[in-house]
Amino acid sequence: MEIINQVKAIVMDLDGTLLNNKKEVSERSKDAILSAYEKGIRIIFATARPPRSIDIFLTKELQEISSIIYYNGAFIVDNLSGTRKHFPIQQTIMSEIVDYLLSTQPETNISIEAEDNWYSYKALNYIQTLRVLANPIILPLEEFKKVNTSKILISHCNEYKSIIDQFGEKVNIIQTDSGSLIQIMDKNVSKENAVMDLCMQKGIEMDHVMSFGDDWNDFNLFKESGFSVAMGNAIPELKQVASFVTKSNDEEGLAIVIEEVVSQSG
Image (cartoon, rainbow, N blue to C red):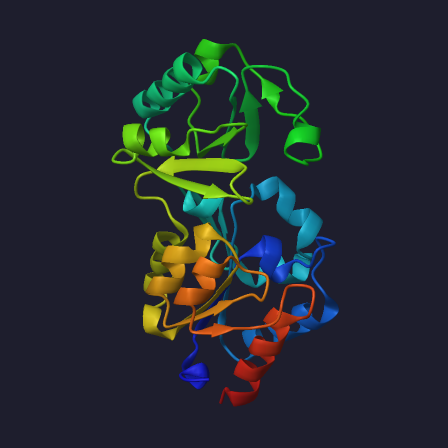
C-alpha cells in the first residue's frame, strides 16, 4: 500500500467503520489505535453523532488520546489541548428550512442537535423511528426555530432533491443511512474541513492523512486525504474513490490496515 509509512494522522468514522454491527469497538481495533498513537500518529474520530453518545462507544483511554469531530464537523473537541469549536447553522437559514418543510412536507420529522442537546417541536417516538436511546427535548415551534443549531435531522422525507434545489447553496446537505436520513449543517461544515483544521494546527498536510469510512458523509474527506480506506461494507460510490478497500467492520477491516501502518512506522 503506497504512502502507508508516511501516515501522520488517522481519521476514523464510527458507525459502520470503527464500530462493528454490535456497535462495539473490538479489542483488536482498540489495541491497533493505541499502538498507532504510541508511534506518534495523530488519532481523530469523525462522526455524525453527538458528544453524549461517545461514552457509550469509546473508552476513556481512546477519548483521551484523540480529537473528536461531531455532527460531521459542526462541533470539534481536541481532547489533547482542551480546545472546542462550534459552527452552527445561521438562525435565519434554520428558520427558513423549518418553515419550508412544514409548508411543503408536513409529514416530515424534523429534529435538531445543538452542541450536546437534541430538540424537536413535536412529540414522536424517535426511539423507534431513528433507533436511538431517548427521545428529544420538546420545544414550542417558535422557540425551536431560534436554537443555535449544530445540525438538522430530517426523516420520513421523500423530497431530498427539492431540499437540495431550495437550500443547496446555503447549507451542506447529505443523505445517509441508506437514504432514510437527511442531515443539514452550516455551509462550511464537513468532516474534511474539520480534519484540515485539526491537522493544520499540528502542521500535518492532508497528503499524510489516512481516512476510514463507509457512507456518503465520508466521500469528500476521502477525496482530500492522501490515503483513503473504504470498509468492505461501504457504499459502492465510496469504494470507487478509495485508495484501498479493506474487509468489513465485522471482519476487523480497520484494525488490519492500522496494524500494517504501525508495522511500517519508524
